[in-house]
Image (spheres, protein in one colour):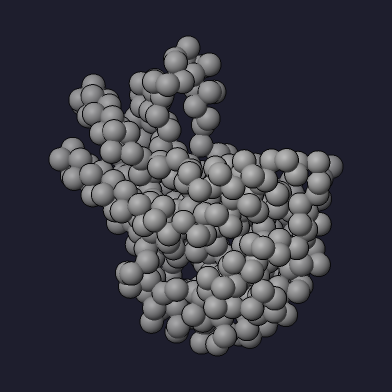
Length: 364
Ligand code: PMP
């Protein structure tokens, strides 16, 4: 038998792969659209493809286990020291490294209801207890989260914007929270979607690192940089915290192609700009379409939107699947009346709205 906390776990359920649905329904994969995993619909940057091609002849060699070039580029990008950066195999890896280094039986981690599914997985896998705090209007209730911290709390996970709700908190809420959290509690500020929200009232976690030595900001190349397949994320923290994370990291946790690609992606500011623009336009397109269908959704600063379908959500999801449209049920997050829809290309969004309209008419 696995360890007791692991027995309580169920595996992370990803968005249904296109090929799987194609097999199940005998559809042509080209006729299926997937708006289920918050992926970037632009496709990879041509500069990234070039960098990967250049790195290919080195496939027989181990990657640079310290990720020197990428850390150097990130340090310059953020005005930080390289010693403040920990690279991860996706930002999921970073979350797990934190749990592995700081949590053990008897400890707890605090996070919100409707928080990202990897927080409880990482916490329970480390043998620690989950303190899930009820959300407020689907978003983090930071005051209630503060109140949930006790002597056994070692880590708090907060996501801004949050997945799957898309909710966010502003600068003053974050500052008040960080001021009040006891020093010995690490705050993991998960900013997987922050690039979509820049220029808004959302705080940039990087700015707070010098003020709060217990802060870890986690970011990823999977979303706005469009590199989900390659698995590259990183933690920004104090050098002391980074040194601890580095102790529990797998020696070569980020592969060579991913390292090369991430360096190229970071330089391609034009791609990032286009990602944001496409996301803003796609969000508007979806919101306009959903409103026309009389639907409600949770306002989102991510590249996805949680739409309320009521008790028929599961049936509507099934009907969408049968028409080749994959979105994400979030019943596993305790939101059985919602489906989460990632922002796609203009054509994908239009197809989703068209199919949804058909499904709703049939359902009525
Ligand atoms: N944090 C949040 C809030 C997420 O939604 C995701 C991706 N679904 C991740 C972290 C992890 O992303 P990745 O491992 O691809 O960096």
